[in-house]
Length: 339
Ligand code: UFG
Image (tube, rainbow, N blue to C red; front, side, top):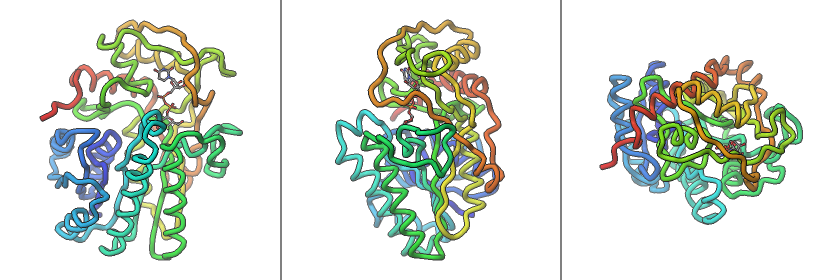
């Protein structure tokens, strides 16, 4: 298949591009490079030996994306990963989040319709569940419980839009993948997560502390109702996540489907820091502070549906993820070189 990846130069996109190419598919990428660098695409090419055409554009620019798709016709499928993803920023700039995340999706659906592309995989998030009523989370768990931030709402609204689009057009195959917490990096150390500024998420923050560019990890609360009092999450290696996209694409059937992509294994904040200390051989200073507003105590997947229907499971451990993240971090202490 020839697959268009929007946001294909980003953290999850770059790993997905590698996985697709290694599975025998062709990849073309549109990315505005607002959260990454063209160097990521050069490195996808280094890892795979394949040429990967890149259009630097905002996906809302329908004419540009349509032109790129026509130039590389036939394009068989789209994986839509372009979007804004910072929870805190979405609360400060909600309109921009709705504009970008919904606008890119709608523009893409129009381009797909015109070009006759019938298959779409969407980058959703476990955040759509909001505060879990029951764990582990299955695809049938209610969504939107106390969902307070615009970022999460955009994911939930996009899922609704895609479900409606698939219902109206029997030829369309649409899959939403609800990611749990992506971590790790490609084993080569050539591609990985490259957050702008001070990271919000735990593993990139811990890694910066290990390498010495940040002083200590603030553990957001140790009074949750969890075994060690800190938050439990389902950390999934980004290469497992990437393989989940390939499986979803290869199994996509007409209609709308949703899958959790997680390991099913809850890991606490303290567990993750300890694993990173083992992987890096560094001691990681940490201090317990107050809970972060909006955080849930625990969130982890029941990944059985993806296993049953896509033949996919997460195979890599938190130790693998820490090793690979550290390898990426030490080889690229400042992320990708920026031009
Ligand atoms: N944490 C800390 N210190 C930090 C950062 C995080 O203790 O400096 C803790 C959090 O409290 C939480 C865990 O580490 O218990 C994981 O936090 P992350 O920020 O890494 O991840 P979240 O689970 O909060 O965020 C993820 C996704 C978001 C998504 C959100 C919704 O990264 O995209 O889930 O639940 F919106």
